[in-house]
Length: 342
Ligand SMILES: [Zn+2]
Image 1 (cartoon, rainbow, N blue to C red):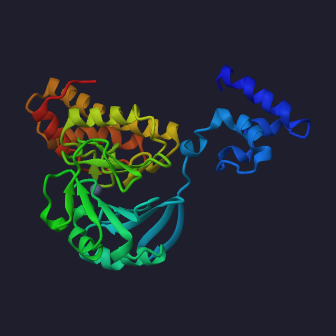
Image 2 (image 1 turned 90 degrees about the vertical axis):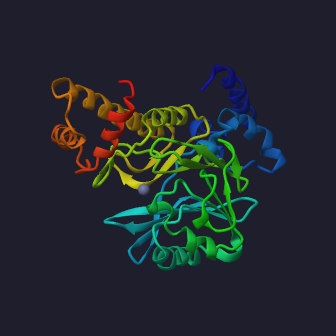
Image 3 (image 1 turned 180 degrees about the vertical axis):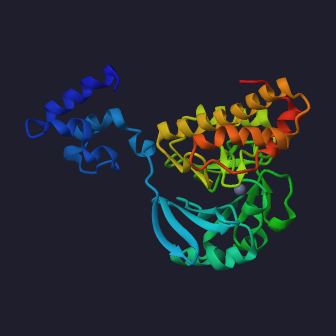
């Protein structure tokens, strides 16, 4: 707490009189509620809560499983944001529902297949009382890979009122309502900021609900990868820049990723966990870059497969859910792009 804000707080406590307990000054539940309309207590409460005026937006989220839908799982992330985990090739991919303040519902990502939409997304929409045809005004795609955009022809056809947003200039499979996001930071659906996060691929972005600072990053934050896929980065320098950009983003309070990434899982709740997640993303790619160059000192002509074998043998025991494979794409990229060590 800044000293400049202590004085009004103490004055506020004095005004409230002796009935205010010690705990009320620092941890009163009222500090996270909406502005009080009762005139009599308004001034005192405002003074008391002044140091924490940004508290509602800075709250860490608390993801909770709401129900299972067949093999899928529906979770609540924030009061206006829901996550549907859809089975995909032995793991899960994610579809996010956002209730916006002024522009109906938004859906972020579209799972893998038409069956995913019919089997899981339609049922999740029913559970959330969302009429796909009329309530969904916005669909956002974090990138065009199959496990995120494969279901878009079916989803876009069902969501007749929705504009579909993505970074590619055109996307025929998204139907006639596709619109390329023009600028980094553009707001869509009134409450969602689109942040370009190139690196995993060139059309990657994240969607930040500016009301709570909760961001769905799709696959933009790779960490050490997931299951059989090690860190998948196709543009190393862009990836590093994207992670640094998020580290500097003051709006960001929570992160949700599309897959159960090693080692932090799906969620970063609160600013500190976001920082840890993003620094781990940097650590993972830097580790792979440095390892590749170190390996080449002795064996300059080593293939990506050979480097991966050595990397896995060296690193796998250090993290329990370390991927069992899948680093060769990124190693090949490192061999071609020759990014600097870090
Ligand atoms: Zn993915």
